[in-house]
Image 1 (cartoon, rainbow, N blue to C red):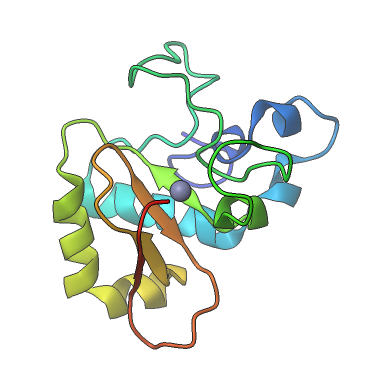
Image 2 (image 1 turned 180 degrees about the horizontal axis):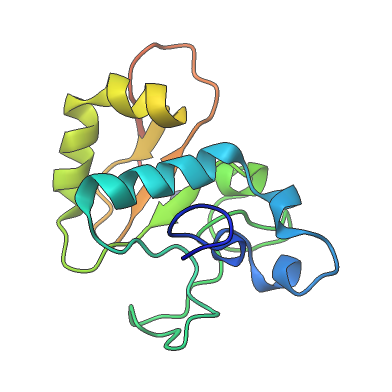
Length: 148
Ligand SMILES: [Zn+2]
């Protein structure tokens, strides 16, 4: 049970600096980030991980994740103008899934995903996570960007 949606808690979408501040995490999370995480959780029926630093086993996925949701402008993870810095990007992890199968499902059902969540963009070819964001694009179709 989460505190921000059925399966997610707000800290999963923000880095520790925000979670440990005296400001509400919600100020730094977009509706899109929560909607796409919950949509994929429901569609594939498997636990979806974003940040893991407060899990009872933070290294459940091998690494401790702190930068998979919103990032501080000062974060040196990813690119300077990453959508993560604009509370748009999320990197979703699902144990035992082929991320290319999820990307293909998104390509095949883009309107469904877009209408339900606002998704516009994914990264291509990532093997250990699925990047989603809702940057404003001028095209009415899925935008796929290279990782880095
Ligand atoms: Zn990302």
